[in-house]
Image 1: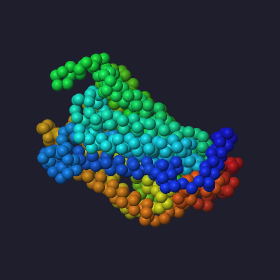
Image 2: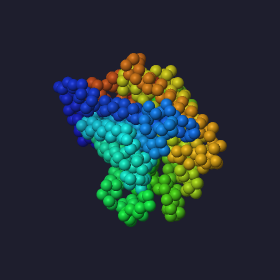
Image 3: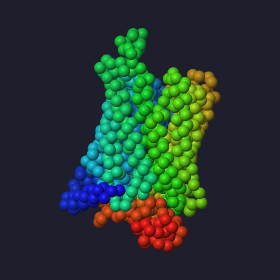
Image 4: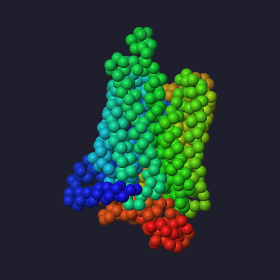
Amino acid sequence: MSSTDISINKDVHHAHDEHDHHHDLNFFEKYIFSQDHKVIGKQFLFMGIFWAFVGGFLSILFRLQLGWPGATFTFLEPILGGWVQNGKIDTEFYLAMVTMHGTIMVFFVLTAGLSGTFSNFLIPLQIGARDMASGFMNMLSFWFFFLASVVMLISLFLETGPAAGGWTIYPPLSALPQAISGSGMGMTMWIVAMALFIVSQLLGGVNYITTIINLRTKGMSMTKLPLTIWAFFLTAILGLLSFPVLFSAVLLLIFDRSFGTSFYLSDIFIAGEALSNTGGSPILFQHLFWFLGHPEVYIVILPTFGIVSEVITTNSRKPIFGYRAMIGSLLGISLLSFVVWAHHMFVTGMNPFLGSVFMFLTLIIAVPSAVKVFNWLATLWRGNIRFTTAMLFAIAFVSLFISGGLTGIILGNSALDIQLHDTYFVIAHFHLVMGAAAFFGMFCGVYHWFPKMFGRMMDEKLGMVHFWMTFAAVYMVFMPMHYLGIAGFPRRYYSWSGFEAFNIFADLNSFISIAAIIGFSAQFIFLFNFIYSIFRGRRATANPWQSNTLEWTTPALPGHGNWPGEIPAVYRWPYDYSKPGAAEDFIPQTVPYSQTQSSNLPNEKDFE
């Protein structure tokens, strides 16, 4: 970091000090319209938890239908009203539930809830900054997300139902309001909510990138950043480059829906009547959507790479294995994520040669992913492991990432993907590698940084129960789906009982639905533990996990500005654990090498 950067950083920090000293914040400024990055991070977390339960509840509803397609569910009538007739879930509402479940989980929970929480909370604390580069822009990013959430939530209660075109909203179903009831007002509100959501993500991403580049404390070079910060940094860059493409795709969709254009429509018949649209192509929408959609997979999973790396090295009491290789693999994954989007489109009539190019690039992306897995396992190898709840979720994350990643290699092969496309094999793959794994990374981060967020500890025993129930349920839900997919079992179908070939899987579908209900029920243990611990949990010390990174040098519950005095300088990388000759098994980044002569390595003798 240049001397200019350091002087700018000092000026910004000094300005924050003066602001905090001279202005007492009222309740609304402190907790509602706050510009404190820690409060905004918690706001994203609370909203993400809310949406996780909404999305999870929707999945339980359609798993009831899939597990017992011939049964009647009269107990749902008071909850769903007219969408349940004589105990049977309406077919169009079933499609709407699938659509909203995917949208909520991918965007509102695993993008906004995950990145919004941990990027906001950890970036200033781990790089040594008083706050984000722009507190006002940071506040706006949350409130745009809040507005998006309000619009999306209202759409669930429309008389015509929410959007029902699948979470990928492929035209022509999404482009024709008259197609089905879920293509009407519900789809319009989906589009409005997503536009607001994209604005939120762009505001946040600009802030994260600017803060990491410009506001690092003295001595905090890029090669001394924790892997969490590298992960958040690259995630923000991915979002900044890819979300505008989805915005443009949605904008063209609005033109087709409302202004008579034909970007995505051509030769359409509804009820035997030919529409006037000609010249458009729904494949164009797929290209635009998946140009966001595949980077989105890594926007979801990259933050958890950093979180899991931090938790594994802290609780293994070992330096992270291959720090520079981990950064290189993050960079490789980020770059390759932009050139593999068409592997979602092998069945669109793509030229086979072009398909082979995307297949080749898709298989290459397994290499940096494998580097990360190897480095996590090497860090765990012969470590002095502490099995905290966060550590269990981190280890389980690695397990899920391996399981889901292996099936990704299968689906990356175009010849195999054409056979498995739109089957339960695809559902099993992306739920393991992206859905469940990302949730485990999120839980890992919540359990690990909860003491810094709220100044109290979560209950470890309840955490263990939550972990084992969730871990078992996830594998019981998604491992059997691989076998269903290989047998050709189709996704998104309201009922499979009309197909004689699939009736042999009735018991397996019931088993999956029961496991899903168990897994969803386990999340109420987490919710109780989370809320109870905020108010009644055991008070935390400033550094309960004996970690090295800067956030643990603040008070147990840091105020606005993070450090009460001068911001500490950084002298070493963040993973000096169990160094031979050291007095303790951890050496914080703020300890100069001159104070650890007995443990310095030969190349560290002259560092200061």
